[in-house]
Length: 291
Image (cartoon, rainbow, N blue to C red; front, side, top):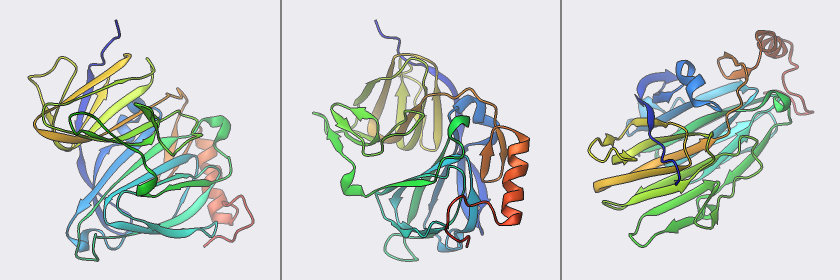
């Protein structure tokens, strides 16, 4: 009989300000990172007040991580030191592997213009030491390219990475073997999914109430993240009003972490080298000019 995962820890998101003044909610990061290995940080930017997001995230560097941006409402214009530029719209995903170094900017806009709702998530995933300095790359996925599985109860499962009921997500070839689903459960419906026994799994609730495993009388609500214990199966159920949540899993790296701002390496010496590269104009390891 499969072991059903129980809840290891719960956290509620906290307000922070990042970039040039973007108000967002930090779901987890920094202090919680050892618990969420291989995931580093999850931010929820959700506002209908343009003054809280329009200043965006001007030019900044990344090295040693992957940033996964998923837009629910609104859009983000982006450009980078490799010459890439474009817009991530509602329902789109940008899975950026920073690798050895990239400098980029991200400028959000509410749905329907500056006065509209902005809602997106950015998840940071670690890269193993053996591949920290790989060449940067993108997997940019439009909403129409994300497969949706709908069950007999009308629950909908958007599969960004991984596989569920024969639907395979378009994001592939990621070393932490991630699963990333956006799940909308109908009232009193169940999400049941087999996972690798020792992979890290979490659920971030966007709307409604969710129960896990045998905790049917103890629902958890929006803006809470549920970190799960080891086990072979995840059982998450919606209450009477249904629920929407993000499910993510990944293979832990078990490596040391040295972290300063937008750069995550394995040693402090590597961190010092990264910032020295920034100072000396050698951060970008390709033939494109730095911005």
